[in-house]
Amino acid sequence: MDPMEVAVTQITSPEAASEADPGRRERKKQRTRDALFEAAMELFAAKGYDRTAVHEITDAVDVSERTFFRYFASKEDLLLSFIRDGAAAFATALAARPAEEEPLTAARHALQTSILDLHGSAGSLTAYLAAMRLIDSTPTLLAAYLRSVHDHDDEIIEVLARREGVDPVADRRPRVLAAVIGALVFLANKDWQASDTESPEDLAAAFDAYADAVLPALAGHWT
Image (cartoon, rainbow, N blue to C red; front, side, top):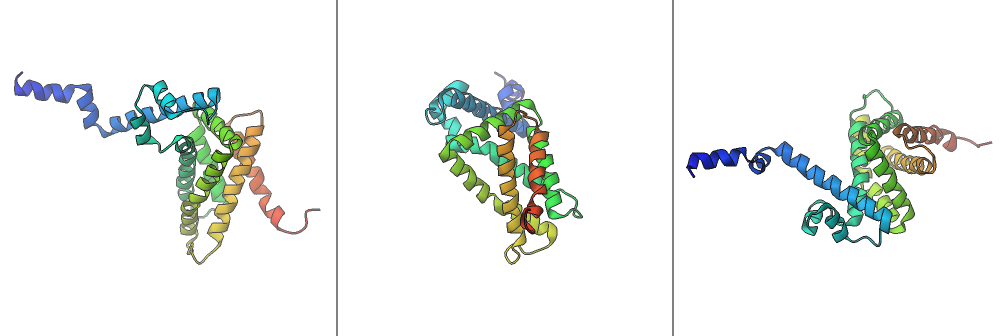
């Protein structure tokens, strides 16, 4: 084949085009990642988390176990990655809130934004709810989830401190509020899982209801 024809073939072939287009490569990676997650959730629901092996997840997607481990360190990591995406979306939304908003108000609005952005579609919302129910019913996953939330507190602390212009080491308030936000999200998730509705607005409303109870719970007697 003429060298020019070889060059044209390489440029116009789907594989070469994919390699030359970073956006296409990232979309392909995301599709594989999503497919692994969806297959895992179906198997967890059918067989149980503990009885599902990694090779069964990869067989369902028709990829190698090596491919699985390029995306996730373990089954636990696969499940918690979905939750970490939510934490990252919240931190991004919090950093983007107007500077004049008080910290708790900014957190409330940021959570609403991140919930709607990340879980606005029915498919992702159903997956999130299924993941949270599985975590809540599996002691090892619940422990890992709580550890993951704690590990991501630093990001929220830094965002809060930067918004308010304080030193996150010397000033305890960003750490206190980050801990409160984490607890409110956990409680809101519990209520949302127990409800008959699955809309993102209901999860945001549950968080707001708990946020409204923070100051009354801390100040004075309750009777």
